[in-house]
Length: 234
Image 1 (tube, rainbow, N blue to C red):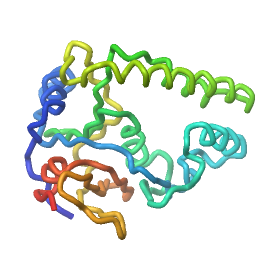
Image 2 (cartoon, rainbow, N blue to C red):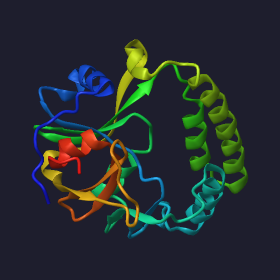
Image 3 (cartoon, helix red, strand yellow):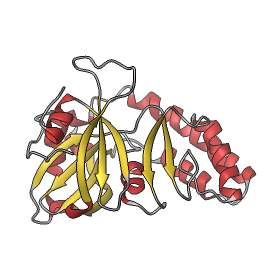
């Protein structure tokens, strides 16, 4: 485990997060800010959840399998992304907070959180339809919701290709808190490397975040994020 140094990467999007965080901070001081995302190939190892992170009840397994078939999660993945003793463990909430683009791991004087920049110019239709699909009480209902999700996702992707990066449009940005816990819930951070996959300059870096309840989660960041969280980019 490594002590967490107080360093903030000086990137444009990080500055935007910092500028929007004043109301969320409530007097706290940002000590570490690092870009954060899910692993490209992932699986859960959490009691009460299957390898895709779905509850292990019979209906939930069936609905989860249908959703995975549409959104590309039909295989278990190669690497354990989350490990814990129960679905309410800190690592599960933390990792689920990384599911969006523009997510940032933020450590303050009193809290650890996942904040994300939401683009207000982008419609929420895709996310809303996916949530609807997951709430449906039947496979048929889930399929209808997923059909809307696929259509909305394609439409939004086409629109997003025409928009400048979000940090160039700060008026369209808002900050959303996806996960938050007391600072003392964070036990430590260590580097993690995908087996047999070489690292290269400018490429992604991976970290393992440990919580005091014994759970842990892995995340993808960049060199600046690894430097901020471990004191070294290598």
